Figure 1: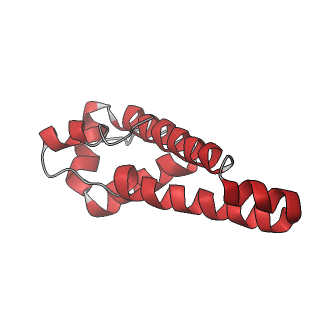
Figure 2 (figure 1 turned 120 degrees about the vertical axis):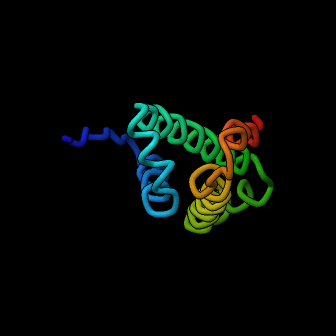
Length: 115
């Protein structure tokens, strides 16, 4: 049987694929078999990107960032980079590394994101 090439667009989708492939191979193979893997990876990419972007935009309005931006642009850049890393770390635990224990849990996986 020929393996279908999976299209992955984005680092978060790539991370999720690697987690599934290495830590939930049965789920990964089932998603390939039923054709849902690409959609799942695209959804994860979209959710994580949106979450990180919103967290960073929220941080840009914080007193700490605004003060640093006026006094020391390098410090402001470091703070912004830290905000990105913190948001990515949270998103990794919520959407990328999360392996549902059952099919019902899989639907709940996306309910954790609040605007």
